[in-house]
Image (cartoon, rainbow, N blue to C red; front, side):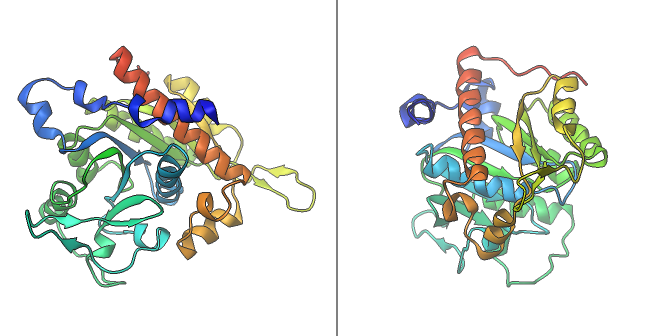
Length: 296
C-alpha cells in the first residue's frame, strides 16, 4: 500500500502530455487543467473496454487518490451513465457556458448518454460526431485533473483517429480478450495509435478465465495466454489478467463498480494494480522522455 501511495501521490504525478509535443501546436492540443489524458481502447466491441475504463477510473480516484475524469467517447453506444449510476443532465456554468461534468465515486464524468433521452438512437454522420466530441472535451469545465480517462469507441475508424489527433494523449491502454479474433483487432488498434504517435501503455487481457465457485479451478473459456503472447511479440507491456466474474457484470448493470462494491476482492485488487502500473508508466515516460517502441 505504501508503494501504491508513493507512485500515485498527487505531488509525484506530472503531465507527460505537456512535454511530449513541441511549440504552439502541442499547446493547442492540451485541455487547460488536465495533466494527462489516456485512452482505453479496443479493436472491436464486446471485450469489456467500458468496464475496464470505469473500474480503472474509480481505482485511480479512490486507491491512487488522484483527481480523475472519465469521458465516454462512444457517441453511438454510451454506457458510462449506467455503469457509473449517473442521473440527470450536466449543468452549464454561468460564467463560460461550459458543461459541468456529473460526479460519482470521485470521478467527473461526461457522456452523450447524459445529454439525450434514454434509449434514443443517434443517427449522425461523421461531422456531427466530431462536433459532439469537441463539445464533450473542450466544452466541459473539467477543473483540475491529474488524469482524464477516455473510453474510446471500438474500432479504428474516423472517430478514433480524430480523437487521437485532437487530444494530446499521454498513452493508450489496449483491452482484449484471449481469443485470436479479438487479438487480431487489438493489433490493428496498436497500429493505429502508433501511426498517430500515441505511446502504448500496454495490453490488458479481460475475461481471461472463469474460476469455478465450487472447486476453485480456472477454466480458460476463450483460450489461454493470448494477450501475453501478443504483448511479447509486439514489444508491449502486459498489464495483467482480469477474470470473468459475475460481480463485474452485476456491478456494471447496477451502476456500482466492483472496485466500490467489493474493494477487497481479487479482481478489485487487479484493477488497483493496473492503475498503479499506469501511473508509474506515465511518471516514467515523463522522466525518461521516450515513447515505448512497438514492433509491428
